[in-house]
Image (cartoon, rainbow, N blue to C red; front, side, top):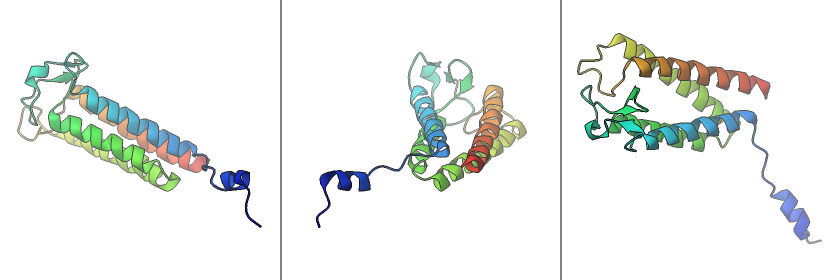
Length: 150
């Protein structure tokens, strides 16, 4: 007996995405957007001061957050990773919890270094530090809570 067209379609239905996968994809999309916006004059103040890296970069995303080409590229890569890792619930959890942990380490790094030193190669400023704390805590929380919720 040959399967009918409708039974073949039912067999190949896409499995619904779990909430944790949707959250990882949403976080990834936001990082991708933020990374791209870091290259847009007007959205990034002092765009003419955008350098590849270093604490001398004067470019400010939304006039507040220190950015550089490296910083923007990291956001883009982090966004792409989130979109790719949202394919399975396990990978989505790894992205959210692991990525959140990375941002918490970046927060610690940002508060430990002198923002006017060569160690601030990303670069980060006080606004970035607070954002990294919020992102790190938020991503870890989303990853843990949504993983438990099923």
